[in-house]
Image (cartoon, rainbow, N blue to C red):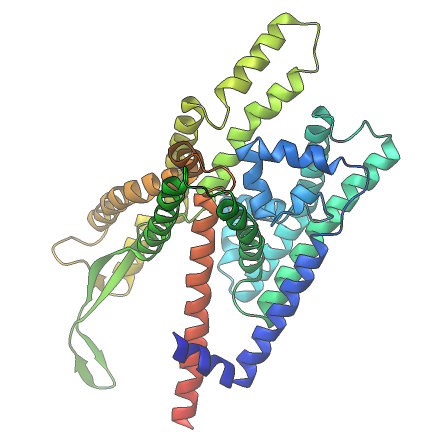
Length: 426
């Protein structure tokens, strides 16, 4: 690894990209501390300290939400827009054709994603105001101040999307992923420092268990993220340039974690809904039935309740299967293998191959779905086991951080290898 870093720094182009990435990340961290006035920051931080679920949003924004900066919404609206466009591409024929037109088609879909991000950002900005005002953190605003607040939050998200795109073009790695990675990592030192400062002789064992559990999580994330099922594929003998070429064997890699962290993002949107409904119903102070129903929702969907964690886990598992089924089409893969003269040994081409790939995918997806579900509920389980509440374990955050680091290192290594081959050819 150190040899790779030395080679990267010795290449002028990659060195320029790394410096550019550091500058963009510095700008992102500076903007995340530019506050929006009119908010009781002390009450806001108290609310986040008592709500593990809202702490997850603050983790994604790198502490911006806790400070209520202009980029408090982070990149969540853009991520939601990207997921919606990806699903529409699978079900809408014109978008599917557009996605097959190469670079120009992808650029057009990216443009549609940006357009969809704007209304989603406005909606989420108003929902954020509604949530904070119901908790007494933000006072009731007149139409003009409310419009200013919504536009300020929306402009912050659009600015982050712009930073992510120029980082993709001129920096290292995927810009959006790197910004999310930076936001998550920015909160780790503070939480870790608070945990170490609060360590005493009485809870030292719990802190050690907490640290061992964190290392086990990182090892598990790396293992599951890199785990693939290699399906052998053989291609028949071909005649090329007057020569007869023998059969060639290759492998079709089926990833265990085919869906990434997208199922968790889907599940978060649904799990948050009952809490928002409960907060809204509390405003009807005269109706006893609505008050009782609101209290029931608040207790049932408390982040420490067994019902909440079980429901959250099942949602993640269900969305993992759903998203994998949408993005991976065994029939299409089977047709592509057959079109290029390939076959899986011992399996007939066509429908039998599609059924074979579908059965394998269902089995390995179960392992990936259970893993993602455990990552989603791990903060609650970790705090309940170790009683360490100053630093959330953040299974989702660790999953994203490790995935982005592995993907970025792969891209950097591939660029180093490419330049090594160019030097060899020259």
